[in-house]
Image 1: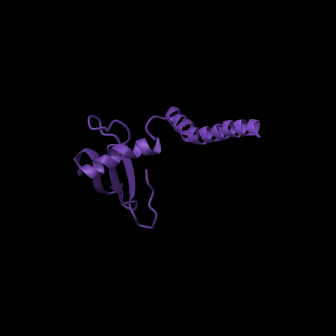
Image 2: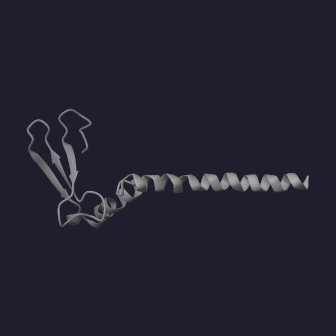
Image 3: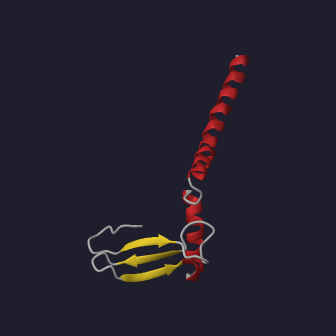
Length: 101
């Protein structure tokens, strides 16, 4: 659910439509007028142009919102790996350099 950022603006609710769900993430969104509750627009990812389909498919993969906490933990570990490799590489280099001097 995305709440409005300005008074009177619609809010948006994402959801999954059975039979049309993407591999991960919502496949549809509905915009609703907050004062009347009337549906203003319905977006279906599988009926959109290919750039919108691509965004709907890759967005959850990019943000890690598709697999729950195990995927987020994996993202953290993978994200910290380059820094850890840099630190251990520097430590190995420094130790070797100190032995030569």
